Image (cartoon, rainbow, N blue to C red; front, side, top):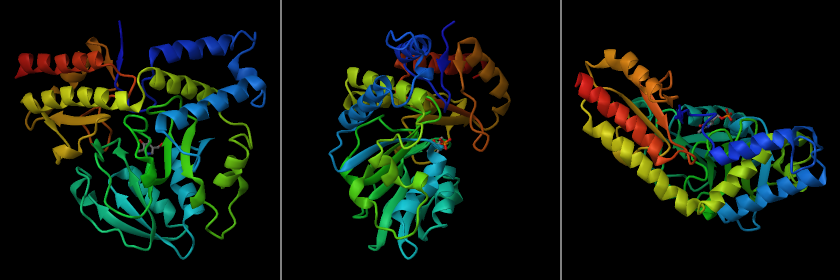
Length: 359
Ligand SMILES: *Cc1c(COP(=O)(O)O)cnc(C)c1O
């Protein structure tokens, strides 16, 4: 039976990418060798790395002012690496607190400079994205989490500020066009919308670097990886290869301007059902902030005992990964680029069927 993978991460990838990746594990490009056993400095792998970078530049429409880095350590390592490289001891950075990933970034940045939390929806369980706040003029940057994977909120426009933005885009990178000029740095763990876990993509404005005067360990200095083209040490070769295949797929499918309306249509389909079905309620208080990537919803008050039957019906229909994050409860449907709207329709049909059976 076809599975509809609503997992939040590691998550769905295009079927054609999986097939090519599987083939490359057995025999990469007819070399008689696996992609897993060739040197990261071989011409064959260098070509993969070059193509991956070129595709990111093409998809995100990056100028030469920006470097593209393929790192490890996950988005979680970027929580400290961004501040270590961009925030001097006497500098101040503004942080928007819109979820537990933001909170983790704030905690780490405090190790390196002054952090001002300029907006927070923590008191309301992060159910909306605060707007209309001031970012102090002396802020080195404004850090934000573009899509809050756990609670299901997403920025649909960027805050008005002159400060350059540093963004954790782990769960919505390449789901829509990027207004790159607004950003000094973008980072993303690959496992939500790009490829396998183990790769962290960083896009950084080169001019923003080299302005702090602390000693930065070589591996944690972005300039190391820029000068060595992400091969200072052994990079995560297989995740880079699979990400490259995904970038090809994004480009072949019309790029980011084609991803955005497709993702919006999937989101509209499920939110429509969440709002129309009396058995369910959305968890995001401000509908304008609803994520196009991760739709979170719960059972309506008094209907909580339908949790197990609903998940069982999901399973029977092949819908997996629908259980909500432990901190929010209920359900979460993650609908990254690779998910077709037909799969969202299957889940919506299960929600309707629950309504008919128990409504
Ligand atoms: C998943 C996620 C992270 C954590 O990523 P790791 O690669 O596991 O460190 C951070 N931020 C956001 C927004 C995420 O969705």
